[in-house]
Length: 215
Image (tube, rainbow, N blue to C red; front, side, top):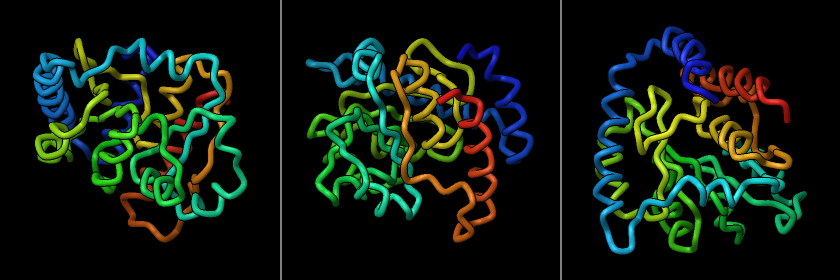
């Protein structure tokens, strides 16, 4: 998705959620600087976008959300048929059941020990910068490798915007952008009542955004 197409949606989200765009932009700039440092390492901890595309293009993608139903949903799935994308906290449920995701889309507020372990086992980390995780970026990003950066604000040269707002719907937008053959969702519950009012608003947006994608 081109930023020109995404920006009007992004502005609606900012207005609805009462978020200030400047904090997203500040976080994206910090992520960009940190990725520049990681890219200079030998070997670099930052991967090229082509590697993410190769992992997804013309593949059947299983996107795992972190709703409580994920624990039951995974029992019905033959994971060998899919490239597995985990939305942040879904990583812990997968790892606890012996499943290492291929790609983790995270704003770093899940169990980062589990995510770092999955990363060590080969998972690509799509790390998202937004206004609420500036401190966490500084704490957690240094220990990760095979990283790609994303933002929901204006993209930078090494921080991409594929569309999407929550970890779950960003997975879907990334899979679509990278040319997935099919996208299957598990662990999603847009009507979950056992969440905070803020999370309820985020779920409304997640459902609305995923509905935009022709699965």
